[in-house]
Amino acid sequence: MKAFQLFLFLICYSFSTSIAQQSLLQSGPMLGYAEMTEVLLWVQTKEAAEVQFLYWMKDSLPIQKSSTPIQLTTAKNAFTTKAVIPDLEPGIQYEYEVLINGKQLVFDYPTEFKTQSLWQWRSSPPDFQIAVGSCVYVNEPKYDRLGKGYGGDYYIFESMQAMRPDLMVWLGDNTYFREVDWYTRSGMLHRYTHTRSLKEMQAFLASTSHYAIWDDHDYGPNDTDRSFIHKDKASEAFELFWGNPTFGIPQVEGGMTTQFQWNDVDFFLLDDRYFRSPNECKGCERTILGEAQRDWLIDALTTSKATFKMVSVGGQVLNTADVFETYTHKHKKERDYLLRRIEEEGIKNVIFLSGDRHHTELNKLTNAKGNNIYDFTVSPLTSGSGSSRSETNDNRVDGTLTVQRNFGIMEITGLRTERKLTFKVFDSKGKELWSRNIEAQ
Image (cartoon, rainbow, N blue to C red; front, side, top):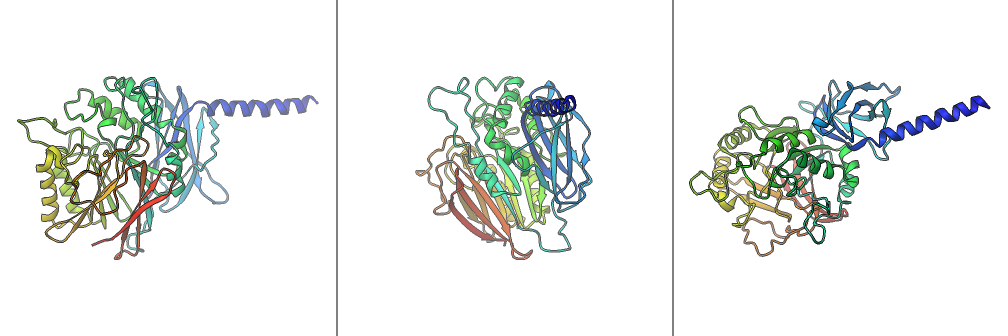
């Protein structure tokens, strides 16, 4: 009898200890960048704790688990930590576990990742799916403006997870700083923590690779620019909560610019705030990207051998309406320069990915060399939707204006020489609203 009682005690103790460690989890785990032989995992705890990841090839027998070094989360880093998992095999599905203070956490959704495939010189590039969207507002009434909550339909992330995309590109305003957040590091970290902890988001974070740019609301005050006094704090917060491959490029001091490749597509993630001139500046050169970032982009596009070249930037590029958060508004000279240089270099298959506008649409421009340029704007995910029906936009593709919460999926399919891109837009519940196909030129 005593032996049986001891057995029950040990079982109960083990279970209660496991529950205690689960309660230390604040948000995540999240899968960051994924390459052929390396991925990044991220997690946040509620207090200082030891974090470790175990991982193994899915469906392999016998299971051989490897582990990352134990890392300590601290208040200094908002109790976040990242683990780079090296020496993986290309094109392999892995599963992973999260240990907090030595105890395994249990999730009711998959925790897994897949490395990119080594297809070059062997086959056509794999088909894959990219999720895109912007503008994530999660209500916190004590700090929100009075009245009806601006955020909602949080189940949109469950709809996105159901699509099982290979990667997600967050197109800015991925959290919304409030007035109480803008001017302190603690305020910014609180806002990121509050948004990232959204229950409906967790499964999506755990098994899709996530990449991000920022825009004004996750950089500073509304419509802010390079003059923001706390952009160093905003940069630190962004780095703590995202798993991009880099944060900035060697040629440019400051900013969150980066680049990565997924199969036969190159992604250029731009910073439209750190170098941005004030909108009302009368005696300066109007710029969104800054000269150094702008020239790097043209060089990188010219060098790229990718089938499609995806350029992510906060505001719209091809919308011809002279309204806020379009390149035409206040920055037409730089917009025209970019488009002219793309034309001069004969760069094909450029797709701008943009957000911010609180509506979704596909824009198309054919330049003098006959090359098509697209701008896929996807907004909002959970913030309030706007209305742009009265805008005079000469480049909008008919039937694509969407004025409700939504997300986008891009499918890349076909043989190496016959690649096709399909733009799809879904409502919060996952119902398809429209789709358009284009073929690589």
